[in-house]
Amino acid sequence: MTLLRPFRPDDSAACLAIFDSNTPKFFAPQERDEFRSYLASLGARSAPYLVLETDGVLRACGGLEVAPDSGEVHLTWGMVDQTCHGQRLGTRLTEARLALARTLPGATRLILSTSQHTQGFYARFGFTVTRITPDGFGPGLDRWDMALPLAPPTAPPEIRA
Image 1 (cartoon, rainbow, N blue to C red):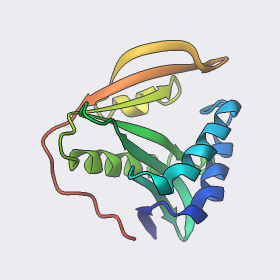
Image 2: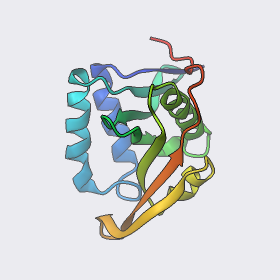
Image 3: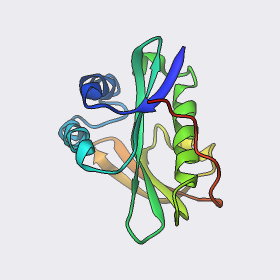
Image 4: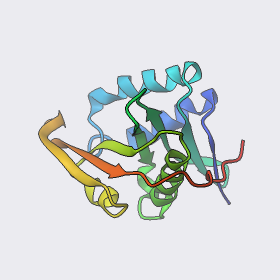
C-alpha cells in the first residue's frame, strides 16, 4: 500500500537516508547539511513537505515553498530512494505537489532547480529550461533551472494525516 502524507519531525532520518541514497549522482555531498537544516526548520514554516510511504517504509519526499508576493511556488528537495527509481513514485509525488501548488491562492508559476540527470523527468510535466549553470551544484553536477506556468486553482490532492 502507498500512502502520501505530510512530513513529521520523526521522518527526518528516513529523508536523510533517501538523500544519501542519491548522492553523489543526484545531489552533491555538501548539500546534505542544507537539506538537514531545511528539514529541521519545517516545523517553523508553513511550507508543505510531503512523504510517500510504501508498505510503511518512507520511500520519497518533496515539498513546496511559496515565494511571498511573487506568485512563484518552488518545488523543494524532491527525491525518491535510489532503490525505488523506476517505480513511478517520483511521478506520484510530483503530481501531488503540482496539484497542491495549483490550489494555492495567487500561484502563477512553479519553478525548480534540478540537475542534468533529472531535467528530462520534469520536462515531461511541461517544465521548460530557464537557465543552465555548469557545475552549479558541484563538479559534474549542472544546475538546470526550470519553470511551469500554473493553471487556475483546482481541487487539492488527497493527502492523509
